[in-house]
Length: 400
Ligand SMILES: Nc1ncnc2c1ncn2[C@@H]1O[C@H](COP(=O)(O)OP(=O)(O)OP(=O)(O)O)[C@@H](O)[C@H]1O
Ligand SMILES: [Mg+2]
Image 1: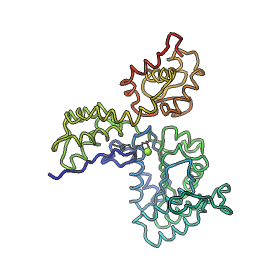
Image 2: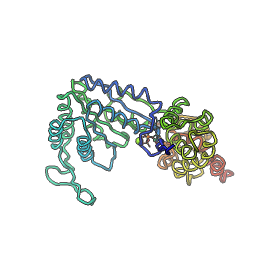
Image 3: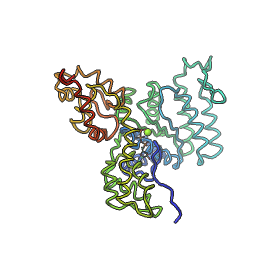
Image 4: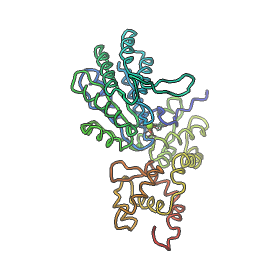
């Protein structure tokens, strides 16, 4: 038998061989796509989830589905260091180049419309960077509504041809406030017409607050929280793609994969990929999983947790252990203070801030704290002795 290609995907944002456990989210997106196509305003959709839960993979799948349904998609990853208008221009150009379903005549007219976007910076040749253009397109006087008008014009022209515009915004929480406001406003404006824009976004759980701060009506958008995969979903994530190429997983191997990965998509792909490489023949057995287990775990610890957890101070280590003892999910500052034996949360405000800066903690919404990376608790369990040692250093002089 010719050696089959490894079907698993470990790169961030990569499309997994099987988008397992996301049926409900995909169903909602497909329903919204159909509405947009027939001129009924769909509810904008936002995927929320911690790092590595599969937000980008899902977003990209929906963009492909939208394009296949005769849409045109502008896909943007929010980034404060870039000007949205520049990124949007590039993404519109790319979308027009990419789309195979748009007839040449319509494409040319869309290109003309997109050409109306003012240039606020100019890319120098040979990757020498970008310079701002003075005068009418002075970046400080960036025309506030030109991007909105161009998006509306593009969308109108698409609807005239039975198509629609999709705006896909990843890493919503990283958006500059004004850019986000522009996108939200333009989507909202079309919702009152028979020419809706379909919006799909993704971000960390605090993206919901970021959207709400831009416009409160975004509270009524449809939010889907992406969680760990169930044991059932995990089996379809890894076994179905293997079977397609004549390989299968034994049940004990799947149990071991579930026990090690807890259904966290990043872990699932990493273990499955290593077990695939370790197998001999057409079966992935328990022995393959146990053989690769420790090595994969070490690699994942190094890439995800070791850096944020390096060099925690005494009080930081104590804080982390207290949050861990409180159990899964976000917790309020006063609960954490209480767990630390403190009267009020005021004393740990700066610790919390430092742990956020170190990427250990994250505030899904104001006043709450949770571990930034999924399965941090398992990491803490594995490193509990070291963390306790750090938290107790000099404990004779009090808890802090
Ligand atoms: N439903 C799924 N089933 C199995 N694997 C998945 C699924 N979704 C994503 N993956 C895999 O999980 C990994 C992480 O996915 P992705 O980069 O989309 O997550 P993310 O939530 O966007 O992460 P980040 O917050 O870091 O941007 C990738 O290797 C991807 O192929
Ligand atoms: Mg992502």
